[in-house]
Amino acid sequence: MSFFENNKQKFSELTNYIEAQNNNKNDLIMILHKAQDLFGYLPEEVILFLSEKLSIPAAKIYGVITFYSYFHTEKKGENVINICMGTACFVKGAGEILDEFKKELRIDVGETTEDMKFSLEALRCVGTCGLAPVISVNEKVYG
Image 1: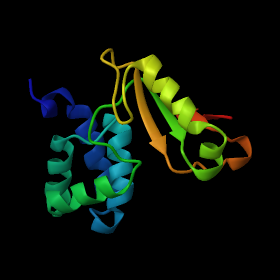
Image 2 (image 1 turned 90 degrees about the vertical axis):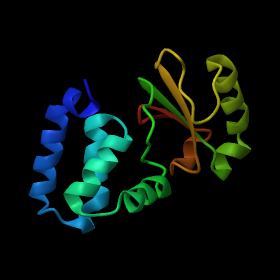
Image 3 (image 1 turned 120 degrees about the vertical axis):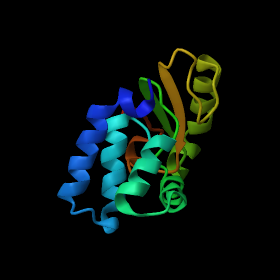
């Protein structure tokens, strides 16, 4: 069964969302957020679908996806761990924390464990410098 057939309901929901935006190309970022919320990531099939629906070249959509760190084209683990590497966090030991996560999970930044339980990411700043060093797990912030 194809990706499209396995995700028919999600593609239908995405189509309804796009139509509610009046197929407006200027809403691409909002549409990408919706697509990623639905699918968990933005695989090639979704990019090609959006390209056709919005009459935007797939390369342009891919360019937007890769420009913003929020979007990702690979499936992430059940738990996404983000380590803030901004100045305040780095000075207070974020590098060592990141190294410990890499060692414990046996993965590098941008990778996911084989069992799909954990993905490890590094961010530049999450805006909570007073809690430094900061990590977030599934968007919940810990100082």
